[in-house]
Length: 92
Image (cartoon, rainbow, N blue to C red):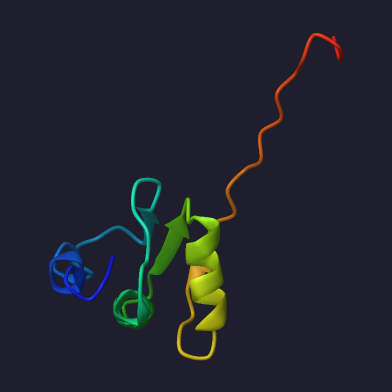
């Protein structure tokens, strides 16, 4: 998500009619710039005002860093992604 896509992204949400808890899955996308950060911040505020929760899931490490650097302007709930281990023959 970047400056050229934030309007289309924001229009996809209907805060009043959405469920009490909304999860945005970034598994196949990423936040690329401060326009994306601002769009997430505004969306988060809209859900908070409606008494609802917004969560972000599957953020890449660079997206997490970008959000971490913007902590002063954004307050979002990032769902921690599970870390999976692979069992090998040596462990069995």
